[in-house]
Length: 120
Length: 141
Image 1 (cartoon, rainbow over the protein chains, first blue to last red):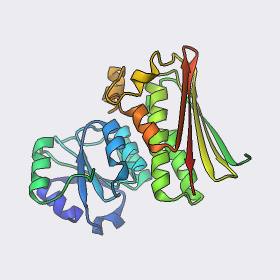
Image 2 (image 1 turned 30 degrees about the vertical axis):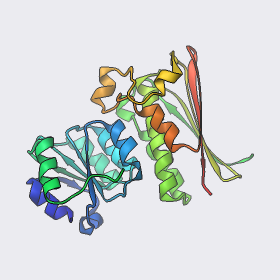
Image 3 (image 1 turned 90 degrees about the vertical axis):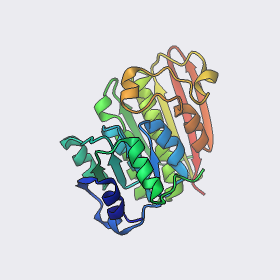
Image 4 (image 1 turned 45 degrees about the vertical axis):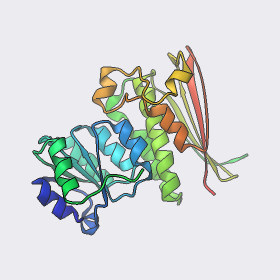
């Protein structure tokens, strides 16, 4: 599913677009967590077309995405990164979005739309 | 074994704002010399988890990246303490002594050391109250 459709489903707003090239690629899986340790442990074998859904809003989220070669992060619960995160997102070529949905709601919407979790 | 590339880094104690900078540089360095993506990702994950550990569990420390002429990438993480009292427990998934600060950062789930070991081709850890040293190796070919 294209990022634009996911953004539409979540009613999300773009916070920063640092990787325009990836906007035309399909998101193939979603991983939702506030624990970056779990993301590092679980997403390791997933493709870079995996979307990270999180309520944590700090530089470690971006670093984690960068280490895993991910390019799209959606912050739930209306979290909106401050300026220093957008600078880091620029450096790491990341796309950041924010949705007012809770984690539970966002997961439900995306799962119902047919997007799978990561392969295990 | 001779080194064809070596970089040394310092992780400053309590520099939470800088957490992950070393790992980003390690990843960029290895990417620039053509290390393939699947291996690069494993090294980046191991390095980042280890760097975070040095901040949230230790008093900072030193990180060395070394590529040998045998095609093996070696990483060494040495900190000056306080050490890990029980390495066996620390290697158990889910077991954690992390602080509230670590949890605020999204870490402290007790997955760090097991994950570092899992993604490395070779893993060695020694610890005493004077410090902990982790040595990792990754085969490129």
